[in-house]
Length: 271
Image (cartoon, rainbow, N blue to C red; front, top):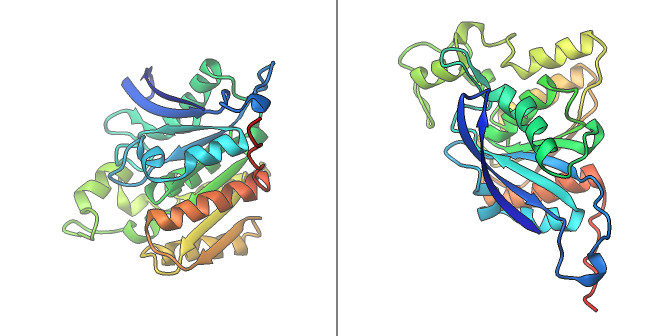
């Protein structure tokens, strides 16, 4: 397992940016070594609010799962911008995640360029980012794994100056999502993106959603699930006991990868 911490100049963000990558090419077990390198499937995995690109490696079992499934995991930094484009600053976070990072890592690393081999996932803010950008860039991603997704357009649309919740205030949400009176129906509203794809007859990525029954975001996850049901959009939705914690995300990232890739292969015994 190669663990890489890299920086490159992003044209979408107009500066140098970091990301962490897990590349399961090497193995200490002789029987796992391969004479030829096959292109790897890839999961672009997004962190939550107030987090950074190292969170998944630090707090979850993603390294084990990457090694077991032989899938590359690319983990960028979202910097509390919900992985959407910032029109005022000219910082295109959505384009960076959905297009530029995919193109750059495919050039740099032995990754498959096939849509069906390219996934996007995340937790909380990253769950929203995975859903929004997975659908926005549906030509790039074959599957979406969204955990405890912060589908906050439902909560912040039409909010007025002076609003505050347990996370941020009107000024922050206005700076990230733009005119909040026009949020629903915009390119930052996952429902609007899904409707457009559906109306145009475009192929949608397969979606796995999971949320804990004690999670403060359960209501918005149920609301998006209900929308997909009404629109007859195929997806997998799972609720189970749990709250907004790494215990829940460790369980559900494993379940999400099992949904996407099947049963994980057992590690072979060392000779």
